[in-house]
Length: 351
Image (cartoon, rainbow, N blue to C red; front, side, top):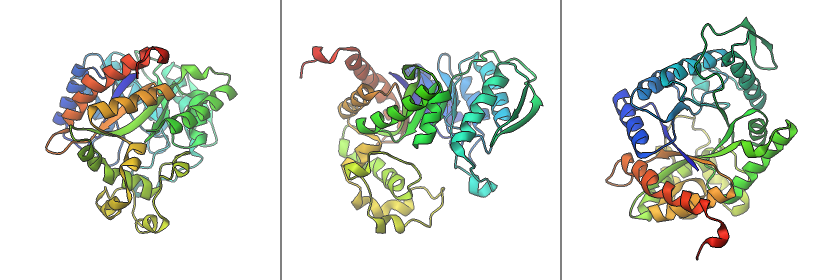
């Protein structure tokens, strides 16, 4: 199982460089950065972070085909590949950050992602591209340079079945946010496999990635308390889709959702704090990784057995500590223990 660290470019560049250096030193495979408006620019920030790393891949998780034309994304990721000597990957999703402020309307998001992947791959391969899709258009053009890694892995992020099928059809990987239960992983895997089969691809070649908020602390209850407001926001805002949570009874009452229905994308968690009594530990565990290191190990093993091949960790700080503790604990304790367990046949394990 691969492990990745997700950073937000709200932090100063110096701090982002520190986080990249730490992740590289303690064993993370990937360093991802969200393309959030209106934080620091994702590609400038990743270029800065690349100077602090030696072995990890770096890339946006995720950028979108609306606020950045896919040709510009190909240009940017190709340039980053030159900075990193090929150590890059691209996360692509339908986006939402800043769309209201920029006047952007998402049109046919699954189709837009499918078309964007095709355009980006062809440009990175050195083709002259003249493209007229349902959403994406590009007059005949090519990149004015040759990226050192033309076959850059592209991961498609989606919480809905149409986008997940697109990931199976065209992606090297599929990312799902908040995919923290084996039941949800299996449904996710099923949709990705459907898309792969329809495109004549082997589903086993597509890595399934769970993007999860995480907090690890000696006191598991306090770790869950850190994530409880974020889970309240996820369930109340309803922007992310889940196939299995309702069946598990993991939902907020309609009145609770209506109380925050007027909120936009950017308010943070403060407006959702009154909902915390409605978010028990079971809800937190269904959407995130929280608890002691030992508890999180068991959760990661279960996700790996269900099909997850990479965890992208967005760390939150435990009480009286910094996020560095969660970053280190996951790499030093959780990931090695989970990998050992996943490498053993189930029959060889002793309960």
